[in-house]
Amino acid sequence: MAITLVKEAVCAGARQSKACAILGISCRTLRRWRSAASLTDQRTCPKPRSYPHALGPTEKVAMIAICNSEDFKSLPPSQIVPRLADQGIYLASESSFYRVLRDYNLQHYRGRSKPPQKPSLPVSLHASCPNQVWSWDITFLPSSIRGRFYRLYMVMDIYSRYIVGWEVHLRESAQHASELIEKASIRQGIHSEQLVLHADNGSPMKGATMLATLQKLGIVPSFSRPSVSDDNPYSESLFRTLKYTPAYPSKPFTDIEQAQTWVHQFVGWYNNEHRHSAIQFVTPAQRHYGQDISLLERRNRLYEQAKQRNPQRWKGRHTRNWEHSSSVWLNPPKDKQKESAKLELVV
Image 1 (cartoon, rainbow, N blue to C red):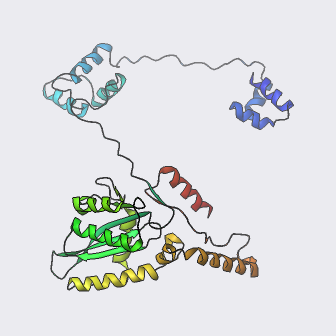
Image 2 (cartoon, helix red, strand yellow):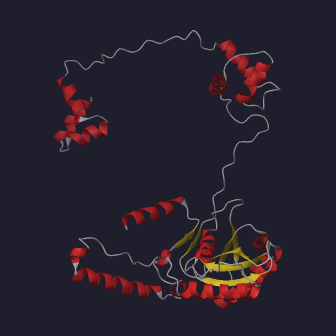
Image 3 (cartoon, one colour):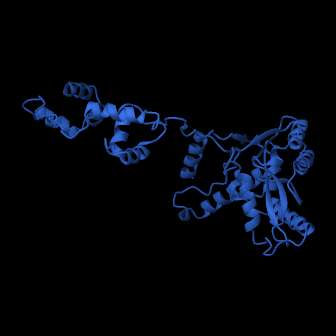
């Protein structure tokens, strides 16, 4: 039948190799079949082997009965076999117990033990312009008193990486957080139902005062999953930049005023001077206020002109990618992660 189908496909204009690939055979196999005197299967089938030492049905039933007994119904074979040995009973090895339980569909969590729970997926948030999704968190700043830290509250826009608000306090408080968000919303002109505010599960983030303020301002709260460290990546990345910048003090802050002064200088540098790698090396302020589009277009024209002047240096390759990114995801779904990886490979 395969020989006939391939012959019909070739007569219709198809390539033999393509026709063989569809049938799951190679061209060499097709040639061997065509030249064979007989197409009957001449392979010798192996005879079924018997294992005298194998467990019999009676032994398997006894093993299942013991595993389901009151004393052992909540224990795995790794616990059952030693306990039986202490009682002077040997039925089979531990691996045999596991194998028999699998055969009888009993190799699962028995008794009161619960199977591992599938973790919930993180909330995926998308921003295509400034002031759609903000991320905020609190980090510690060292003080001159051992064991005492200042709390730095910092809010950033994930689309532009622009720091829209910050404050330094002596303690964590939902009251401080709500006042910071309210002042930042007023400065940015946030309207009701315009903004999503993402944070972790700390008490200042989920305090009653904070939630009441968000409800009053019409801001939708979003929280990371409990005990998950990478659901708030933008704020964590910002804090790393803050604490690893060369200007970060080598000694603790003497008082809260010094800490506030330094953070004020850092925010000015970060927003207006720092070229952020994730937004095509423009400053967060330029992207936040829409100045990056014309800037990236000028960069692209400059590179194209340089390529035209000396095309041998590029050897047919494209110039550097200065395209404006109009989409930012917080905890993107898997399909968006695959698309991003493909784009990176192409670039």
